[in-house]
Every structure is written in structure tokens, then in C-alpha cells.
Image (cartoon, rainbow, N blue to C red; front, side, top):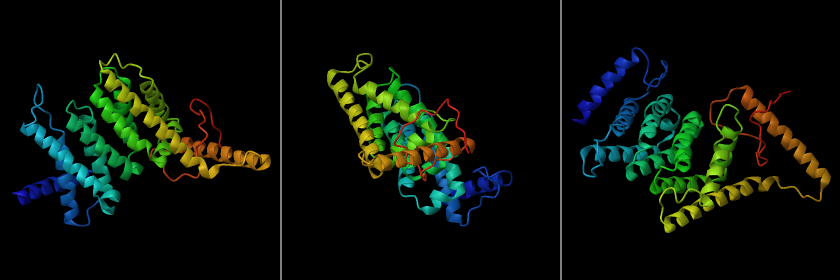
Length: 303
């Protein structure tokens, strides 16, 4: 049964390749039939996870919900155990963009807690293992899922809680925090993800909007604590990232030299990003942006 299904999918894929490949590139080919089968299974799971649920309250025992949850669980397992070929092959990367990211955009707003939680876990894995290929997709997910849920008074306590738990894991990694700032807030063509994130967490830590959501005092306190934990994690990451650049303040000559070199490098780095209209996620940058400059709306001139 499985073999016949795969054969049918192979034939569809071959017929598609006569025009354009599923990945959008006419020159992308699989070097082995197992790679093609892996692509077909991955694509089928993405499509299965996007199937709509029946109207009304979701039934945990319904076939539609169980198949959606199972497909998301399998996709998560695939991404967590992906090898070097899956992480670098053009066809698989394009499949993630074309199928998985669309599936996440649909399931990332699900009212079913288990579906929503699995979507967040998949996003965490993408951010950890595939972010160099998914700059635009990561920005959309942050804006339309994370920040939207934090900023909207109609989102439930459970959804806000799961989002903040996910953000706590992201903000625990210094590299991830700096990556977000460099790739979005320092890009004139991207949204200020880092700025909005810090502002939203600050409001939550202060308890703003808790009564509007109808939360109990215990829920409001838990949410405030979690928001504060996220902010503390971000501050710790900034300290961790900048500790190697610390200069003795008593050494004025050394301090002035380091600041001049750093500022010059930062402006050049951001200018290069703007002038090249960079659309890929950058993790290999020489500049360490511990000084948060407000550059959007200003005009940067390269040499």
C-alpha cells in the first residue's frame, strides 16, 4: 500500500518536473530515489497537517484532528533528526518554504492547544537548524503569531502562556537574541522584531491588560513572572555577548580606540546590509551589536 502510494506520488512529481520543479528550480535534482521518497513523504505530511477541521468544537477523537496532530508530530521528528542533506539540499529547503511554512501559518493560529504547541515546537526547530534559509519566513511568523498573540487582548491565556514559554527558550540563547536584532531591527526593509518583543514583554511584566483578558489573579501573576524572566534572559544574553568587548574605563586611550573601531564597523556592517538588499538570515557577522543604535529612518552612507 505504501509502495503504491509512493509510486503514484513519484509519477506526479516527475510530471511536475517536466515544467517546473516543486522547489521552484528547474536544475534541482535528487541524487537518489530515497531522497525523492523523503521529499514526497515530507510534502504529504505538510499537506495532511493543513487539512481543515470540522466545524464546531474540536473532537479529540475525530479522525481529522488525530491525523493533523500525528502529521505535525512526524514533521517535528523529521526536522529534529534531519541530516546534512536535508538541511542543505535545495529541494528540501524549498519544500520547507513552500509547504511547511504554509502549514505553520495555518496551524500557528489554531485554537486547539496541542496543535498550537506542536506548531511552536516546529518553529523552534526551524529557528535552530534552518534559520539561514528562512529570514523572511521567520519574520512573518514572529509578527503574525508571536507578537500578534502577545499584543492582542482577544488571545487566550493559554496561547499567551505557550508563546512566552517558547520565547523564554529563544531568549536563553545569546546568539539567537543578537541574530534577531541584527537581521531585523538593523535591516531597514524588515520589521523591528527585537524592539516590539521587548516592549510587549515589558507590558506583560507590568501586568497591563490582565483584567481585559479575564485572567485569574494567579494566571496574571504567572504571566507577569514569565514575561519578566524573558526580559532577564535577554539582558543576560546581552551581557554574555558583550563581555569579550569590555574595556577598562580607566584607560581612556584604549576606550576611545575600541569605540571608534566598533562604531565604524557597525555602521559599515549595517550599510552593507542595506545596500545589498540582503534577504538571507545572517549569523556570520564581524560586528557585535551591543550598542543598539536607532538606524531606521536615517540615511547611512558607505565609503
